Length: 249
Length: 231
Image (cartoon, rainbow over all chains, first blue to last red; front, side, top):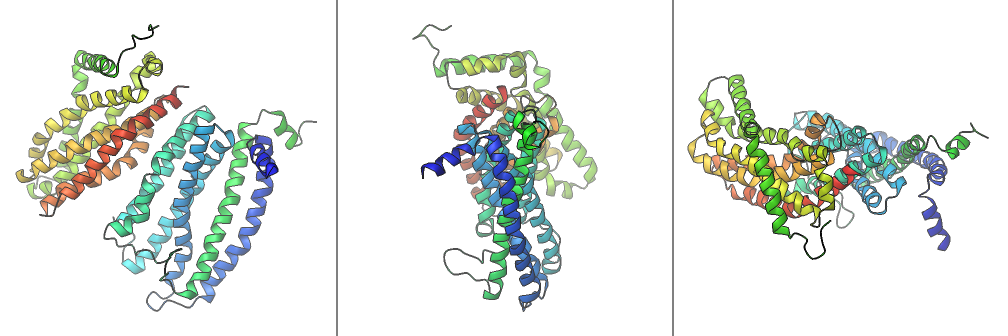
């Protein structure tokens, strides 16, 4: 126990984090690839076509995990930002800011796949429906966090200011999550539940869960890789970076 | 240095700050009219772009009025803390013997009184220009009265976050407009609901609840943002 706590504290130091992130990102990417490949193969070729939607529902195996990730990454970013604000841990600032572009990417994928699916199913690319609109606002919030981070010269105060914005933005997450329940929405309601009965067909569940786990793993790898790059950039003048890159004796 | 035991109280500081802000606005009273002029121009441009058909104008009047007020308020955000950050008085706020959040709340209230209230006062005139049906006017005023303080409180946070950035015009818009969306939806939605003979009070109550929540939380978050921006 003592050694785990000690390792955790050590992780706050940039050189230790750099080594951890290098190994960790490779590990997570390696773990994500087979899971995502298996999930996609199952989703595209194994699952039988839907009796109403034909083959076009298969895009949901990308859409649903990305939509979950778009919310999860925002919450994680706010959590890192809160830790960074309270305990002033530099690595947490880096991690919070590394979340933003990845989360924006997931949000963009969610909106694009949803709109591609909506064209044949709803007969429209876009509708000003609560869930679609709130997801779009989430994308703009991500852009706001990234924009604020870019706009401030000093990296540490930039990360803290952008982090505060992320914490404020968390107020939006429950609105997105429950928008299908609160307002009459074109978007379908929740069909998958961790607690209580799931109304999704059993044949679709395995590939969906594989994709969900795969995107989580891929996100972890991507987060560590991005955070490592940002961390190295911030510490560029330090001795340990020179040593780690093999440039100085 | 303030001698111990003689620190000014909350109301005393609030009165002093309010008097100073009002005096500053009075000395530059031309500037105070600018948000109203901006809103009038938005309405004029919109009416010209839409064509002269009174029916169509009346149909979109609520949306245009809310947007004009929202955009005018958003442009006025820059004056909220900028001058005080530049002349150093914001740093004195940090040293003041009263909570920073309290000063922030007083400042945002004065800012709302001097930028948003003139807009609300002018909105019947703007509504007339857009042929808004008269029976919708009370609901419009009610939604503006509840909505604009909420906009000022949310905007205050964004203004505080960007106070250290030199050219922050577009960035302030990028940060504040997504946060304004719920206010716009419920504000314009309440008037639209009353126009369709539906119950508008649900949306108004949501605005009120949001206002209460923001009155408590926004000054604290804004104070934290000012501390972050200044160090």
